[in-house]
Image 1 (cartoon, helix red, strand yellow):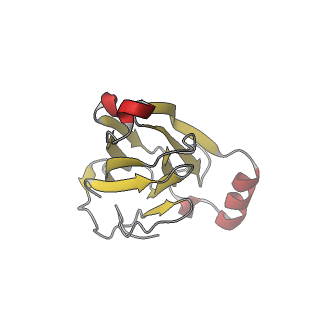
Image 2: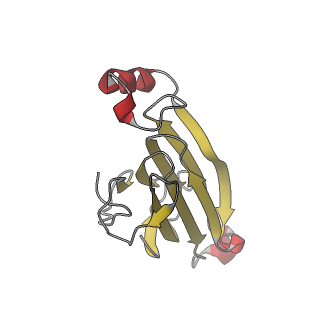
Image 3: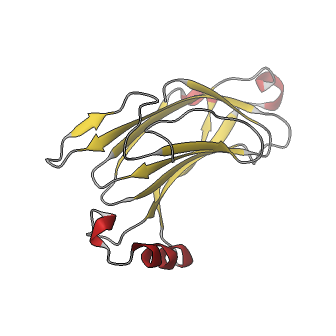
Length: 172
């Protein structure tokens, strides 16, 4: 996904998830756009976080290595299987372009989350780009073209209303 304009209504969040394989990298960047009410209400801002949910224990690079994959995921869902990749940060329009990158050590799901839940008055507008690379057996990465289908999938959703209609590394 390249330069996708996203509007997040007051009190809502926007989440983009990426299915990860061991060795796969995800790069993102975003810009919070200034709003027409910034001079009255202050600088437009959002909260951003990124977290990963692991589908396999540490040291396992493929879910095929797990004898009972479904039961393993169920156990992980019941325990705290989330890891902060990017801690919650408040990002304002004056910050300019914010960039980040994560390389997955094992299979999992990465959630990139932009929230406007702190705002009771106004919506916020962002420009977001997410680029996924696929790890090859020799450890090299291959970039995926926006909208291309690949083994690691991505999905985007707005927490209440909204239709995203785009994908980074294929559909989940």
